[in-house]
Length: 99
Image 1 (spheres, rainbow, N blue to C red):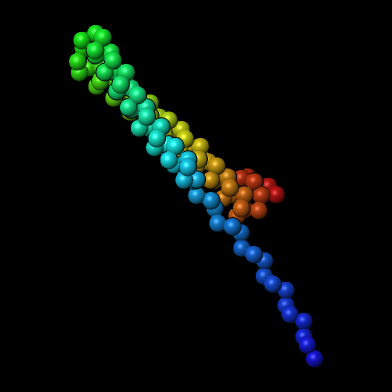
Image 2: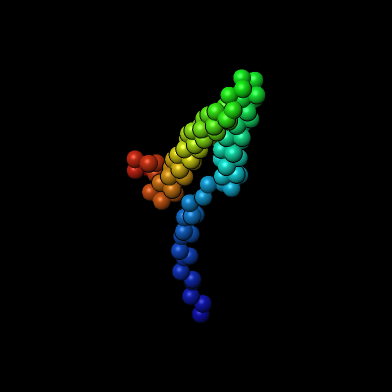
């Protein structure tokens, strides 16, 4: 006589997704491009006004500041998105715990 099999346990929730690799590449490229672009702009200013090396130095500083601020903005938005996905997947509802 065959006995019925017990029901299968429910599948575990999917693991939280890591930030996409393309997003990470884009963040790095934007940081490098902002620094390089501002250095080139500083070099042009130096060649027009004869203020060597201050245009390049100022461009590098402004490029680093702008690139880093953009890096922080993109990274925090990516972390918020990942946190929302984690809360949704593991709490059974939205972030505030409501179903």
